[in-house]
Length: 411
Ligand code: LLP
Image (cartoon, rainbow, N blue to C red; front, side, top):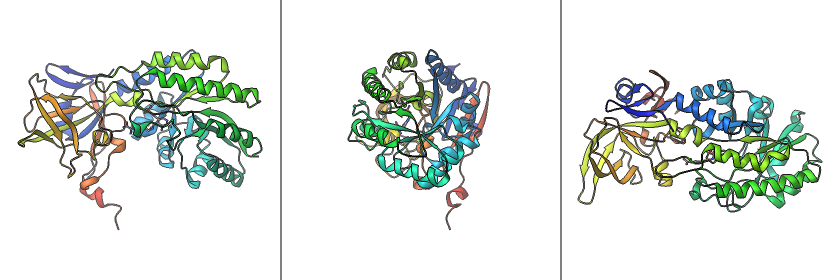
């Protein structure tokens, strides 16, 4: 659900016509709806109201500091995977005691930074990492709170690049190894074992894989509790999918009911790490048609946004709906492509798109998560502006990069 709608034949974000943003800020630009973000946070949070829980928004989905600042004001916590993300969260006013740190390769500096900042806990992804984190904590003479990210060997039935919960993936610790680790951790002076975690993948559109993971982690928690391991947190990760096109993922309510039902009697606080379901449909990439070009086999719509701005189609073959900013019902089959020198530089292929002319605007929908945050300067293209709309006004929350910005750090 989102607040991008047509009024009088013109696509608006909340009450602001996208044409106005294109005229005043230029294109390409990411445009986010604050009302949609807020609604998604609220709906997700309310879905879990029957159980003690903490929502830790996955910063990687959309890391703009102004957006993080809104989340901090709305009381969410944060799931981070780097020192850079921690820096953003703290600068945005996020509470360190609501931050959890995931990821398979944390550096010593990142571990120390997070420990000194007083984060809630580290998600440990290997026994080697356990040793590293314990070493840093001893050196700092501080206790460190940890949870082990288990790898339950479950197929999330999503794109292989964003599936994380099988033994072929680099993520998490197998259950037998995790069992060992929990036993060994008792001997570590500075380690405070507070939780157990799992995250099996992203853009999951059916309950089956979640239910399998829940059954697995529930069994594991009961086992640990029987051995006397007192756990405060069960971190079930993120991964709930969104409708990009015709998918019908479970609603937050259905997802939450299932998670709550499987964990309610464990006497444990839930932690959730949603990213896409919060930010995905709250943003679009606004682009302008540069020209139309016909090859003998295809028609191309060349737009000013490219794979460096939105890499999801090239990387995952992902589908983003394309809505014309001026409402138009006539369609033609085209490839929508950008100016980058790669044949993988496409936004859509063989798609029926509204008939548009050079200079007209197109909205690439559902681009609020893993859009800007995955963008780059490839082909020396300045990264685009980001705009946050609230009601009938908007704010540029990241200015468009200049050519000077491109070479600023080069000696
Ligand atoms: N927690 C952990 C440990 C994660 O690795 C991720 C995402 C999340 C939470 C949030 O997952 P979400 O709720 O957003 O599904 N670039 C890809 C998605 C990569 C997801 C990486 N991890 C894409 O554009 O589809």
